[in-house]
Amino acid sequence: MITLVLARHAKSDWGHANIPDHDRPLNGRGRRDAPVMARRLAGTGFRPQRILASTALRARTTAEVFADVLAAPLHLDEDLYGAPASRLLEAAATAGLSDVMVVAHDPGMTVLADRLSGGGIGAMPTCALATFTWDTDDWDVATAIDPTTWRLDTPNDAR
Image (cartoon, rainbow, N blue to C red; front, side, top):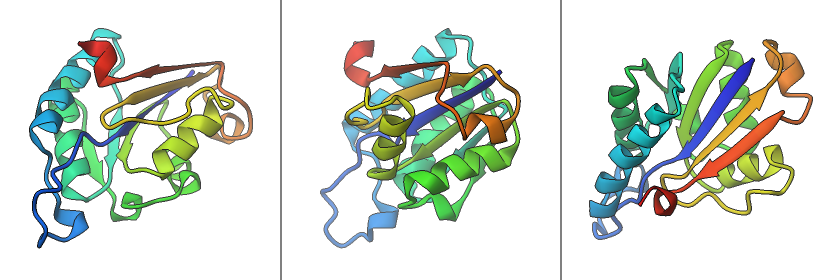
C-alpha cells in the first residue's frame, strides 16, 4: 500500500518587505499550527519513510517540525519551490517509498490535492494535510489510477 501526505507549508510572515519570497519565515500562527498538525498526523500512526520539502524557509521550517515529531528523515529539494502539481507527484513517486510526505507551496499543492481527490479538495489552507492511499506498492500504478482513499485535515479541524 502507498500512502502520500501532502502538506502545504504553515502560514508565513508577510511583514518583511525586503526579504525575498524564498526566505520568508513562518508567522506566529504558522509556528503554532505546524506542531499541532504534526502531532495530529503522528496520532494517525502514519510515519513517513521520507519527508520531501521545498528549500524555501517557510516550507523547510514546517517540514523540520514534522520530521522531529514523526522521527522521519527530511530531504530538501529546490525543485519543489513553486513546483507544479506534476512535479510534486513525480518527486513522491521517484522517492520509490511506500510512505512519503511532501511539504511545498500553492498553487501546486492545491492543484494536486484537488486532482487526486477527484475535485473533493477545493483548496489547501496553510498547514493543511491531504492524505492519499492506494492499494498498490507500485508508484507507476498509483500515479495512473485514483487513490483508494483520501482525507483532508486542516488546522481549524485540529482546534
